[in-house]
Image: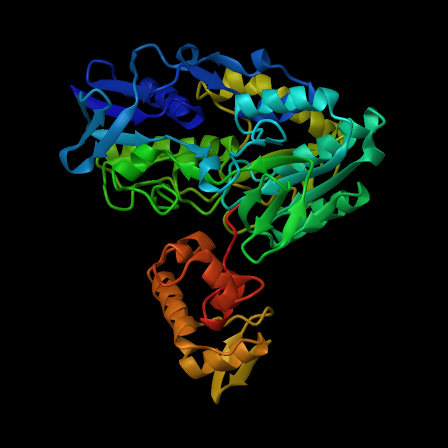
Length: 409
Length: 103
């Protein structure tokens, strides 16, 4: 019996388990998924929780509901990967052998990397919305907050879902306006980037929206520490920004198991071939989703597009054929802009987000780099697609490779 | 900007003043670009510049955090050596491409 081992039962790991179980005969191949947690969070939904638009129950389901029949599931923490012995050692010392390994252990926030971030103000006046605990605590805080200086800070790059802090900021603007509090809330967007976003055209469009909504942007701010006593954040070059409420996007890091295995970079992301998705050093290890060090967004859409490529390449590797799939860095992100509208960006390693229509040239129904109600509905509809189509590894009407059709240069 | 002579060397610059070809770099070129940025280069600066070039040539992505863990200087020290945008400025002076933000 041959063994395919998948570490991580999140978005990427679950899609891969479903795709591979369909193709690998059960009499020849055992597929095992290892994950330490039993709950699957719909992470794009966290954004809606602080504003009371979603509750916790709207974003959770049991992971087990989405794994394929005929896959073994082990709920355990992983101690480390031992690639020279083709095995993974679990926390309790049990070793799982593999013929092929998929690392899909994602990324998570590491607020303890920034001095003072988890001090006395943590979950009192400093929050994150990348965890269910942080998003719920912030929702409770906003219920009674009477206004002041709201600071949204990105601690370091890269971080998961690069547009989420912008969406949060647009939602906050609308949320406080609807409550008649907007003139009592000063909103500042503090980022280590040189502008609102990384790619020039999108940065211009999104930066314009921030300006229209009277949101201050403080660029090139690389946070060193938080001063809890005086309620301010301080950068490495001594800039200071005071706050009454700070929403932090903490440093993102790969799983600590990667570090224990000696397989990561300085942020525990795994060196991965950007086209084949094969591990840079081990031929029978593949890496997918947020766990990679690829120069593209850490986002579910990327994991989904990568899954098509990895599916193809893993089958090629198993059958000893040359790789046929090549990942292009494709990412596709709906961006909520508040007041029932949204925008959409679609890009890859080489092509920045451009204006146009998506997925059908000239028809849409979604508009690229422009605000529309349809884009907002696309985002809301996506939650259903995520649970019912995407995680199951079913075909989606969007190609995994980015296309220039419908885009305007 | 195209072909420009810096410190007696003809180098190919992009629109933002970064060298298109890192192999056209030498320490005198670095000194001239540093002057434009208002920086007088010391041995410590050169240690950082050579580290950046080595990592770039090895195909590694550079971050401020990574340089801060290099053992040459910490992040605070890097800001003191290259005030403003430390990685952007040091990369330009080191003759390597502007650091790409991978988001």
